[in-house]
Length: 413
Image (tube, rainbow, N blue to C red; front, side, top):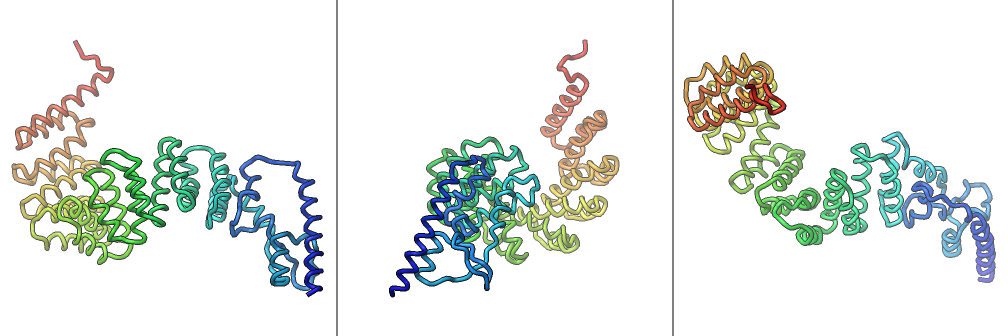
């Protein structure tokens, strides 16, 4: 017992001398973001100045390598050898402001993998020292996600002071992070801090909530009013279920409420299948009864098919039975094909009998060629079967042609 007490007194004496030496060196300071890393790391799992760096086995420990944190452990448990590379800490510090994007990202991830207030402060200073613009969006996402775990409300207050896309990226990522930890609090905050239907905070919340509860995230998405926020949220959720497999995505789409959301999901599913196997996608459409869902799938499949082979897409659409599905498919094929070959598109449309079924395809052709071939565009616009739509398209086309002739707004006399 006396031996242990004597050892403790000796260690504390060494510690006192060590810290006196540190005090004498503290007159030199550096306020750069990188220099503040050591003092801000707090309880981070990364190596710190106050960690014990013990020698390799077989070498006598230098008393100056032992600090208070290490001394307490030694008194209680005895000396436990551990090899930590001190240079790793300094490498991370230097890389926070590296001009090499991969080194910089690695440093941000290393610093914020187990975030605390000190690490957030250091990362924030390093981030704000980087040149502005999209080139630092990756660092912003890492910082915002980590900050959302530590103190989301403070992080959101900071995000509101940012500009343009920085604000958008930061707030969405913070809400994503917060919803993974505490979705109820995130939802409450979002409702209290935004007025109106298009609440952008719900995009991030739904993204994060889906990681722990896809059904709840889906329910929250379906409760949103029709608009861009619901549309973006639906797209995020579809990509998540698609990544789990085609059957999961189909099951998810089947159980959505009937209407625009379900039609969107089926359309996305059709496009995904068409990208990997166009023949199977076509067979799926052909097997459907005419409905709003078939129209949605036909639209996306025909668009993807036209991208791959407009001629094949045109032949497929021609053999489709008359109805809404064929009308939307014709329009999508015409949109894609007219950008590549307007003449071939016009010849294809001429093969259809006159009637309103061809009107959407004619509109697509007119909108594509009215700048390059204004007279041809006017002739096609005049061929629309729907009288009201014909007047509207002719007026739009004539206005665009006039603006091309007199770009300054002056008319001829």
